[in-house]
Amino acid sequence: MPAALDFYFDFSSPYGFIGSEKIEALAARHGRKVAWHPVLLGVVFKQTGSVPLTQVPLKGDYSKRDFARSARFHGVTAFLMPTVFPISTQAPARIVVWLQRTKPEMAAGVLHALYRAFFVDDIDISNPDRASAIAGQCAGDAAAARAAIDDPAIKDALRLENDKAIAAGVFGSPFVIVDGEPFWGVDRFEQVERWLATGGW
Amino acid sequence: MPAALDFYFDFSSPYGFIGSEKIEALAARHGRKVAWHPVLLGVVFKQTGSVPLTQVPLKGDYSKRDFARSARFHGVTAFLMPTVFPISTQAPARIVVWLQRTKPEMAAGVLHALYRAFFVDDIDISNPDRASAIAGQCAGDAAAARAAIDDPAIKDALRLENDKAIAAGVFGSPFVIVDGEPFWGVDRFEQVERWLATGGW
Image (cartoon, rainbow over all chains, first blue to last red; front, side):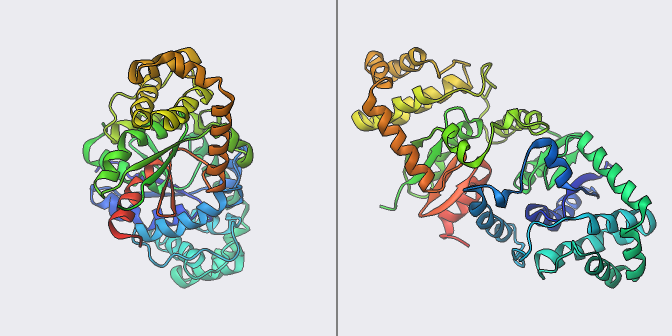
């Protein structure tokens, strides 16, 4: 079995959302699975000196237009720009990290539900109660999800995952690593696809 | 005759170079011409607070890898990262602006020669003598090109072009505007192509 694709994403990233809707089918076309890695880009941005795209003069207006256009281009037709944006993503990221450690078979489903809640249904998933309610609908235990968000062990686990992502060179979302080769952006998925098909060029 | 595609680029931009090698064929497939717009991103970056990609922690190393990989992906196989990078691009940009006003039929050929000199042959085209020598090889008059670089009227003309680009929302390279729709990056060329084919989605 070839190695899984490492897919790094921030729950506040529109391009990450688009990528999350595409990556499993892409991986499956090449006999691969996806290893999901929620990251907190705020921490990464401190190192790169970046700010959220939408807050940059000139780039901000373009970006909002490009998010929606790129979503439609990639067939993700339900995309809507959230009212509150960007958001802190500790709550949903910790839920995923918790599930990966306790009910790994549930993690991807909950992750998609959280991402869609934010970018389709305009639910502010930075709110721990809302995020854990969504996890509860999919994985059956909202109270446990809510407790996980405040669990020091889960906080530490996410921090460690984030440090590992930064050490692996991750600085944006989505970020895919294929057999050691890094690809930043849903606009590199065509390259990811060719890399999987050919082993590089 | 449908309107030309507006193609904005900075001579120091690797993705701009890749785009410059692809845009004419892309436009021609849809019965379009290309209107070339050299811009000085340094001026734009002051407004957006951006710095050259290669100078950003984490992103810098990735970018150098992505420049070369993307060039090969797009079939631009002669790409080499220049020794001196990034560079100031007043000299080549002024030569293009000057040709567009005096020998417009020569402008695209000289532009390609300048871009290839930098990204294929590692010639520092920020140097006015080198840039005008290349223009002379293609357009026959190096001395006139050299004089144009210092001509206050050409300096003003480029400044005006740059202001117009910023007013049109341009903040990166390459940047393509198709019938009013803006696309940033050679990684949006697939979208440009579909936009031309379908009129939008």
